Image (cartoon, rainbow, N blue to C red; front, side):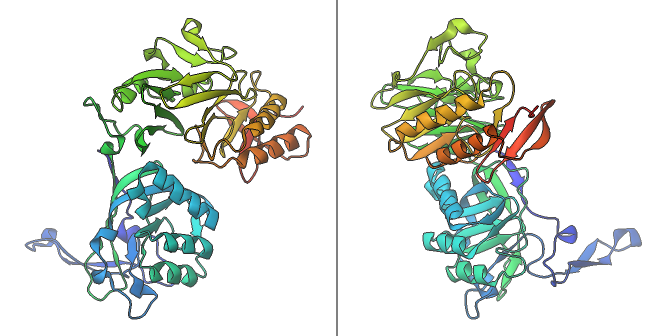
Amino acid sequence: MRIYDISQEVFGCNVYPGDPSPEREVKLRISDGDACNLTAFNMCAHNGTHVDAPYHFIDGAKTIDQVDMDRFIGYCYVAEHEGDVSAEDAENILQAAKSCDKRAAERILIKGEATVTADAAKIFAAEGIKLFGNESQTVGPLDAPMEVHLIMLGAEIVLLEGIRLSEVPEGVYLLNAAPINLGGSDGAPCRAILMTVEDTAGSKNGFVPNADYQVIRMNDNTWRIKDGDVRFFLFCGTEKAALIDTGMNIPNAKKIAEGLTDLEIVLINTHADIDHISGNGAFDKVYMNPAEIYSDRDKIVPVHEGDVIELGDRPLRIIDIPGHTPGSIAILDERNRILVSGDSVQNGKIFMFGDRRDLSLYIESMKHLKEFDGLYDEVYPMHGTMPEKPELVDKLIEGATSILEGKAEGTQVNIFGNDVCLYKFPYAGFLCDIPQ
């Protein structure tokens, strides 16, 4: 288990504009001959990391000592987001939390410089979540926080403000944000901590995940393993299980999977970029498009468009989507209406620079993927946020086409020693060769 302290240090903390700053006064010092060291302090209930009670904005509502403690302690979900949180964003965050663990959707923490809109607040209130946390000193716009506070506190959602999540990966945790018991107060400071949840993995065979990665159970037969900025998946049928990719820094990916299921495990690679094959060495064979550049070619079991890998009551259908790499594939889980997209469909930065990438072919592949509309409801990418919606494919076609036609403006950046051009759109980015 790993413990993250997500609290600010009080006397160096951020203070909401207009609130008094914390002050301390040394009353006794051992160095001065006193029997002990003794400090008195004066501070606002909303300095640094703190919780808001409904009474903060609603006269006659519950004070901090009257709020049920189970709101402050329990499973939570950390979601990454920058900028305004819209109603659609709120729904996606809740869905992502539920797909990991329904209990985690009761408490939502936002990592990043995010501002909750009134429309998003209404979604969280209607969902009946117990707690919402963010890194800002206030929920809602800094210059006009009242409306959002009234909506969320009116639904008795505890607000945990001023937390620090920069070192915390997205995912499920146990939260303890118990406040100081200040009778009659509108809020209180707290020492908020997050604890990793090993048993979320449903571990078998005595294997326990460590803090270098996260194993998140999405439902009874599906897991995702988060390895830094990349993820991979374990899909279980009634007869076999499929590990889809093996991550960037996890040579023991097979052992992790064996800790989750007793079924025979087969390996499928969406493509052979280095951040997707770190654990391949433990497997004797790998289902992969042979167009990929892969050193252990004798291990490749070729797969192409239309091939089906049967797990037992869970067929996985292969779709060829070259462009990002020559042999990129998507995997359609029709029974569960899921598309595993590798790197090709995501809201992060899609690598399209170098000899092996082909933007024109990528666009054709995305258009081909449109032929499968209606067969899946969610996209599981290896990077960026998840799940994504099928509509993202249309946006990616639009963005990539504008680059190819010279209509998009890019910025020169350096990626792993390569000078490339970043074309940033609201829904994703493309890293391409610098135009000549």
